[in-house]
Image 1 (cartoon, rainbow, N blue to C red):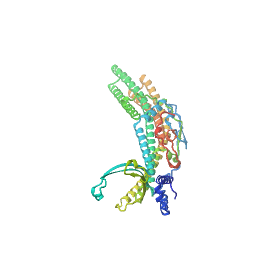
Image 2 (tube, rainbow, N blue to C red):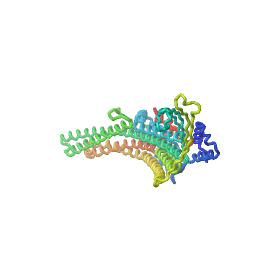
Image 3 (tube, rainbow, N blue to C red):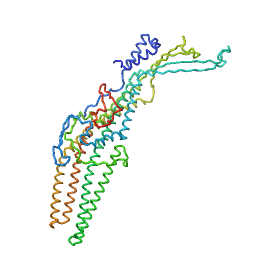
Image 4 (cartoon, rainbow, N blue to C red):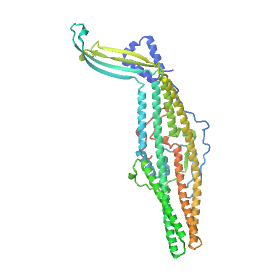
Length: 530
């Protein structure tokens, strides 16, 4: 067992500040007592935190399927997984859209949830510094001027003055030896709380960026769907005019007209649903960027303008545990709860404090610092709870349960994160195949529609058959747009599941030496894309 550097320095400062303390401790017995107390202060009650081991069986990805499907439509590029690499810090720039990148940066700047998380980190940092400062001696100064009057009976009737003054200047210090590491464990827990706040900020940052990018893709897909649906409405209106005209000539019946009128109404209903959905996504983007819907400028994004990333960088599970901010936050929470076990344990043990005072006192202020007016005092105190009906014991047991709970929650977050990556990989893999089928369906439906229109024009096909094929073509067109959107959105989900590459950004630095984190709260959010 060795003396901690902080406690040794604090003790030296205390002895130098008060020479009387050195004189009072000059005897070998007292020096031995002080040395033993200082050495014991290097100890810390409770368990030392160790990073949890990776859950059993989690060593590598079971498989990394990835579609190499190449479809000749926008967003139909193939994708290749590269295992063991890391996600780019600003992964949204991989889609090669300045409008998208600008939207993400604006959201980071203006979103109130990010701003609130930043302030939570500032608060946690300040509390961590305050907890660390509690381990140093507390110095205080006091200057007083007192005016008193004797009772006549106090001087025995000898005619002493009834009034007198006392001036005093005093410098004092109190130092908790922290014999069982209560203060040290409290500081450790506060630092872990600050780490938790930092990773919570990263989790908010990741959630915000993925939601903005996903909403942008959804909005662009809705614009494409609305365009198709408007064409469908126009086509149905044209068919209704055609059928109504033929009814007037006697070549069609009223049933065909009613069916086409119903088809037009359904097309308009679908269009209204898409328009309403677009407004909701627009409002969501406004909220994400910290604006009210009425002040949000119109957003127009073309789904065909985005570039689908060809190389998808996939982390192995061991890396994932390091990268996911929710996993790191759960680990920091476990660290804090573990340290608080030490705090609860130390609360049941004796607490030793040293105090010292030095100063000067005189009956008049002009003689305050004169010869012979100095004084000093040194005191030591021990406090120990004798009976509390088991309150401290139960508090310690409760904290131990909180530590075990945090450990289980960490394991739950790890398992859920692995599932999220596996789900995202499966979705990305199948999206390529689904896009190929959707493209084939759209091409076949379009060809069938054109052929049937020709047959109808020469009188060899009924209007009911033409309308049915028209419905199939419109559904296939919308299905193709949805398949294209899925490829982009599921890629976003993969980036989010992998942690979003926050550790690759240069606006946050992590110093792993001595298991501490260097937090830069002033510039933790980027100002512009890099």
